[in-house]
Amino acid sequence: MAIEESKQKLSLSHPKMSQQNNVREQNLFGLDSIPLWGFTSICGRRSEMEDAVVALPWFLRFPNQMLMDDLIPDSTSQNLIAHFFGVYDGHHGGSQVADCCCDRVQLVLAEETELAIEDLQNGSVRYNRKGHWEKAFNNCFHKVDDEVGGVQRGNGGLADALAPSLKPVASGAVGSTAVVAVVFPSHIIVANCGDSRAVLCRGKLPMPLSNDHKPDREDELARIEVAGGKVINWDGFRVSDTEIIFVPRTKEDECLILASDGLWDVVKNEEVCDVARRRILLWHKKNGDTMLKERGEGDDPAAQDAAEYLSRLALQRGSRDNISVIVVDLKAQRKFKKKTLTH
Image 1 (cartoon, rainbow, N blue to C red):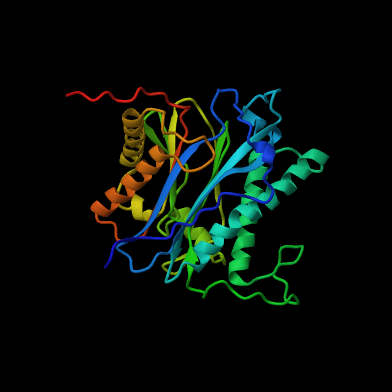
Image 2: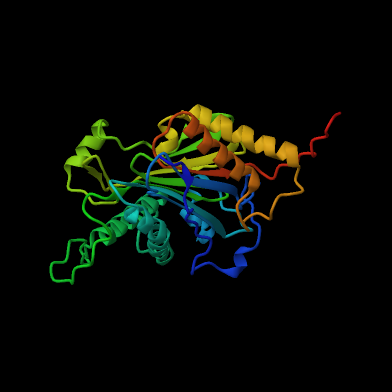
């Protein structure tokens, strides 16, 4: 089978985004709010491309109340900028569900978090940081799930038998995994459904930020028995609930990697983190800081090099699936002297 690169799906704007977002912010750790990132998505040895990838810098601003359980608010910044990254791995013969997730998840999440912010500001609910994010993500995934399946629900959350039916996005067999990360200058929030994965490289060591949803997990078996949706659907099993992990950032954080199982099935977490970190450092040592783009204006060549190297490594290791990789460089701006060539 031919090995070819797919048309990569990339979103760089959002209707709710403010032009005032072009102001650099820092949190209490002095971490830059704008991450550097790169991604690649290749067909690999598969006959069709079923993955989809989204990178959305300057996603939205959030009041620091949404993050303040273990962070003292900075009086000079009442809002924090969030950046959105997602990998969706389609299954069973089509990319329709992955494409729908790529287009819709961030928009629906923006709507759900806006509701959470309104509840916080008017005092209608008791503050629970993680609870608000769990509710927002679960509602988001279920709503996109309904859109995919052509289901309309009433105010009570039940399927509305009287509402006109929507056209399903794909047949009942087609589904997608979903792993997304919302990156703040102070925290990282990861939501996951399926066997795509997010791993944080912290102090040169891998820190998994998601748990693969596999039918051989006991807790997963229990959820599979419950009637699920179509956001996750593979090998006859369905998963409809979302797992949320909320992690404060530290100065030791090197990079965040989100990828489909085309990478993780053949390369272990430890090696992925080590390779990504080393490729970023190598690029900076070779090129210095003269070629760096302004943060937030586009993908970063060092992180891009790391993502592409990981995809090639997966191919060399025999991956037979589509391979999609996002590398987010979380380290503060590196300053390396351009490598001096010796004769």
